[in-house]
Length: 399
Image (cartoon, rainbow, N blue to C red; front, top):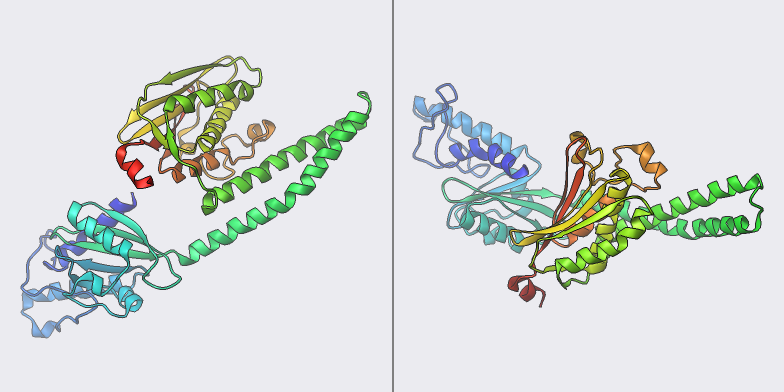
């Protein structure tokens, strides 16, 4: 969506820069002029110096220049040969050395930006990346989109402040969770000891059971917070290996009995994927555990759950399907957010922390896959995620 929005945003620029001005009063039809325009780097001629029919084109140029220079993002465009055609004021201030009609590498030497622009020109598709070598200590999100004339335009958005805030948040959560682990373990341990020593009919037993139950829930929450912080920060390293999908499904099925907790649920396994995948078995076991636990909690008693795998392009798609009441469509896009619950009261009663799906999402993303949910009310829900195939190219990259 972001890429399509970028192309729609620049579509009027492509008609104005550098090929032609546009008469907005006459059906938006392009009318070529002889001299190309360089945004923010050359000044347009005054209207009185031009023929009468060229004045609207110069007004459009000034409007476009003002619009681009008012952007907080840095923007630069190149032709099909990779020579700089124009740049906005944000790019000029960022690099201090924009050179028109010179190769892009003479203005910006960041390899990620150069790669994204070259691929956008060569493949005629939108490309992205993260640039860290433009300004020391700063990180930029790069989006490069092709232009109709064979060139490309690149937009750089400064992510430094946002990443710093995100790191501060992760560190805070990790530190608080770590400090809570010991006292919560003590509370749970002492409450269990007291429960073992007190008589079954004692009125204090109910209070001790409440203390033990809530201490256990808080302990699970802190463990999930720590796990999520490690995965998000990249601190968690995954040991990728070539694994057959049937092995991952078998591990998940063996753990299903414990997850079901004696409920009347039947697990059906469908393995339609013959190609192996690259995965950390323990991490994917965690993903399946969260998805199956979710299916058991909300799938309804007396039904069955389908656990399966099937081949897709350059990957294998795994899925967990239940036949419960389903999930309203307005909730599907937010299911993998931290602490998001469709039914808050039911989730707390079942002992959930609200972090299981978020942890699963970050583990799958760290594997280079994707995850999503599909559902129809009264027809259950299906959670699907992909893992890259362990083809020859993947193996050579890891070597």
